[in-house]
Image (cartoon, rainbow, N blue to C red; front, top):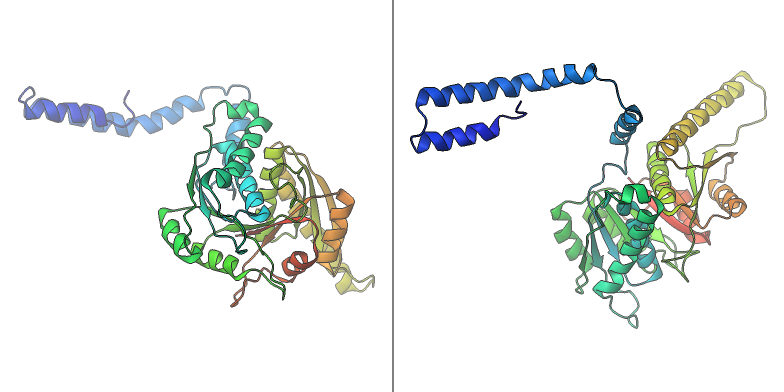
Length: 359
């Protein structure tokens, strides 16, 4: 009846040390502990296999098995590097939406603002956006919130250079980094070098938030999400983050499959290429929609063939009235921070808020 056999061994050891048990009796107790421990797992599996599942039990087990292979579901601890600026507040809000449904701990690093006139961040100000996002996520799923602890938020707002503070903090073990710094994009193009420092110091999955449409109200502005996918693993992970955000905030979600334009010529090669594109599109959409279904999140699905993906994304964002574009990207090897041409174009031209998920 014992799962591990540890309790009786400890008690028997105490009894032996004080002389209450003989060596023979002690050996019998240890042998029984070993036998019950080894027999329990196969016996338990045999008994459960003969027990009919309750309503919803099979669905729960399938959902847990599906989530075990996911990207967001396996994150335990979150780190935020943010300045007291709309980008930082928006990043903190999104982190709260991701951490809130599961009550995951969040650590906030207050980064000194780039603007000399800006006020230094305070602990309460930097943590409020996280807590607000977590509360919204809990309110969206009250049946889950009842058994989920509140998100613990730890703040470090002393003015420390970002490289030093991140290098010290990442040693404590984090699964995901949210970055929200002012001047996300530089006037000459590309990302702020401090974001590159954050990415290299952390070395793991991260998300860069830019409050385009949410500059005036980064904490309470409504969310309507558009997530482009291509079938690549990076785009799938970006879609997972978008689905979790939409689910936590009860937001509308549009999934846009992007593929290169196909020539209208009817040669054998072109026909095969069109067939391959269709199969890739169907498989990628099915995978993401299946994940959304498991998370009980509805989504509109669209597909677009174009050779100008940034323009196509912005056109579909206008059509869906999306306020946030979530794009899964990969960090390219370079001295600067490069997420690819599509990300750079969106950074320079998009009036919408952006979340680049680099995994």
